[in-house]
Length: 392
Length: 211
Image (cartoon, rainbow over all chains, first blue to last red; front, side, top):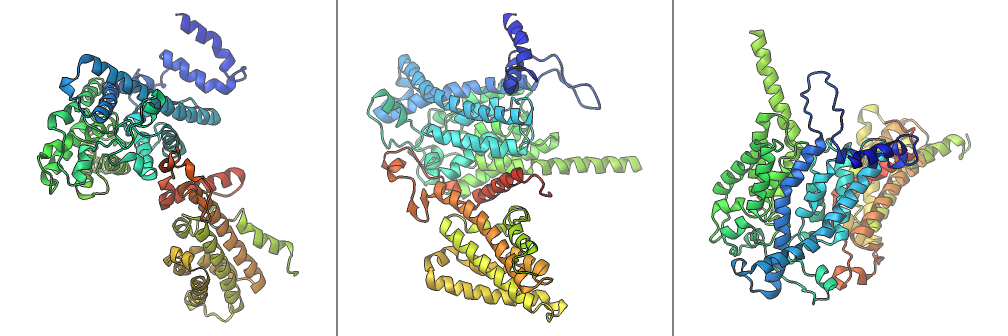
């Protein structure tokens, strides 16, 4: 228990009046990060109490994201290799290539994660200290989600600006963790999408080509192009990736979104730990499937309707974004409607609007706005129903 | 009462700061979002509104005792519309490119809430000189916010200021640099956020403003 002792000894210097009281919120965050706090909310009123600190539930989400993160790192290296050599097929690659691809992706990915956490947590700590509150843990998930939903070629300074924008204008101005209307990670992506569209779409951004190579001294791969399946569909071209590839995830795309398998492992972890609502995940897929069946791409060749659910950010959004408990509905029946509409709207945007090849981000942001309304309707319906029963 | 008495100073200075039409009264937001994507149209728009508010205030103030109460809004609109037509034609004659950029928003000054508000709330009760000061003050109060927002939006959205390149060409990605213009700044949505930031800063400085 050495660490505990150190923390206990340090505590007075960080408390009010202590030498480092300006960093009190940082110390508090570190302390509760390492040890579960003794006190939970007092049992008053009719709330349901759970011993789990929100830091613990947040960490389950981070754990659930690890498969997608690891696969995303591997895929960065793989896409880079495919683009530069133009030869290597997945199954022909020897094990060493998998390992070197992974290390390449790790080196590309680490700075993005560091930037996202540094900027986001930095702002959170400053705000917490300013408002004399605790640092909330919500950003631990957002900070890992942000690098996963951007294309690999997104420069770090742009990522930093977008993260700062989302944390300030999507979260802190609404009152911080738990108060936000929109999912901050998606606001980051939306900001990037509208502010720097050339960095977020097209066929040049999905392969890491500029930054790492120039650092390593290798010739910079300029203008390597690799179109995502959705990009090809929006352009009316035939999709080159096979269904198997889209499910395994060896296709170009935002870093964490390509592998259906890795995301489903995360989904299992989330549902098993009782953190994400399986109703939202299931109904999102249902909504997407129904809409994809009735609304198919008019000129797509070799593209079955169900493949809609495996390409782009559909799975990632359904599992990690739509299930955000803060921005989603609270009522259990509302979750069905919410998820179903996210899936349906995402497909509608994809198919009907050629300007937006991917509709998942906009669909979830749109439904975030409607979540309180859905809740209101279900709560009112229930109140009316019970009122009638009472009068009878 | 002297022309530059303390009360008149108050009438003029109030709208510039503590009674700013955009930052405090939150009026005239729509045109503030639409015309501020660059600095030049923002300045021209601010000046146009200042001129129109000032002179319509004076005219209405002069005839305020003869306007029948039941049709006063119509009379005000006629006066404003006449002035807007004059200003619009002057803009077309002398700064044609800006007037094209401003498009319908010059004509829409007629429906600007600041104008109608000042005519109803001030010019109908006060003399022409006070009304003139009030009009100039409110117009400039509006223009300040427009210029501030237009400044930020043009420099971050286009890298220019009054069409003069501020951020060096070599810094851009196309020319081998790292910098890119922020496309979000060219959209009205970002103007809303910038106006909100302006209000935020303004209220943090002046804590005594009534909410």
